[in-house]
Image 1: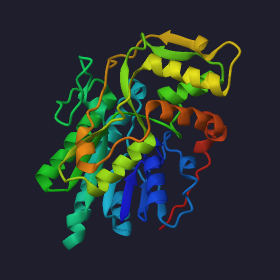
Image 2 (image 1 turned 180 degrees about the vertical axis):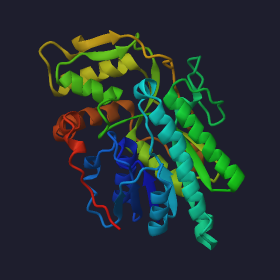
Image 3 (image 1 turned 45 degrees about the vertical axis):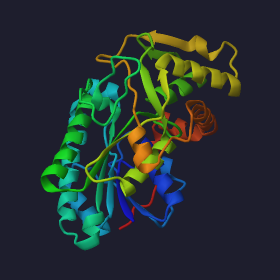
Image 4 (image 1 turned 135 degrees about the vertical axis):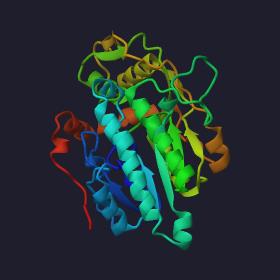
Length: 351
């Protein structure tokens, strides 16, 4: 297969590309605008593969998307390109509306018009896989209930609202135009190559540098944590075996309060790189984020039953791998922190 992946230089997208190149015989076309969150150094290990192609293209640019579809003629699309940081969406929502809503619309139209040119088995087998988030559901009031695929949408942040909008567009293009789409909504991801503005890498790197570990409010917000390589396996399964028109929730079965996540990071760092004063002493409580959801938790029984997927990593094993990776890959994250990663674009752009 030839799979067109948008946002393939991002955290989850790069994990998906590494998984496909390393574990299948499929080809990947990485379509990425290469904004601040796109880091081609996350793909350096597979960049020279003859089955990997890079196209620096904005998904809002219909003309360039049409060229990419016409040139590579993909069998499937995996749409991961998105603005994704909640704090940034609060400070500047316009980029989230542009990329997550207008960009998804533009990509859907490019994919639909390409799909209409296909015939026979190629048209029947084509898939448009939209990767979304559990944040579209809002938060859970109780301690036992879980997000299922039938939960009503109630997004709290501009980011979540923009992703909810993109989900609705994808469903409408399937219902109205017959475009063969499938949607996944995932819980919080973590693992190697995670951009340092997100909770887990931020805490690891701040701790190593002796900086405060800022925790919103009382730190009791609960998230379901999913190791990114488990997520990559699930996404490939859905793209290749998921049923048209279906939604699959993907979670890690690892509900943790934010403060407990930070304490676990401190404990692991004490084990691997002991500090004189103790990393936990760096924990600092800060003013809570506006509209901060209290609890997310995914019911992933549908994807387990239908596609035989379960996460391989527990939170303990995944966090241990994650902390060790950051300790052993200072070159990667130091170039992110000083900005040099964005000045030295790696990869192979092929026509």
